[in-house]
Length: 101
Image (tube, rainbow, N blue to C red):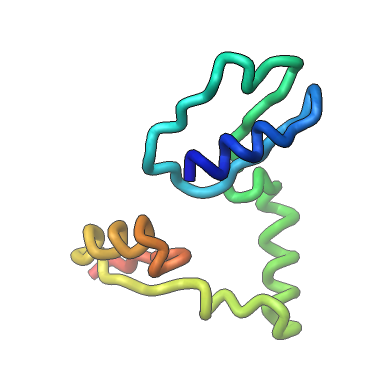
């Protein structure tokens, strides 16, 4: 939400950094001084993780019953890609997974 991002930028200290996650669907309009004094806004893609470290960690957490990824995904056939995208954009689905065939 642009209003939340703008409020978060306004709360940054000089040289503060705001990391954003998720897809932005509306325009984000910033005031000229929003990024003054070295403030920075950066997008975070998949946590900016190192896959060789993150994937084994997630597998261990799943094996321990501490990462229920099956509750975070929704599986769609590839033919329903438009439906999956709509569900993701609306927030009804956290992570759509497409399967061919």
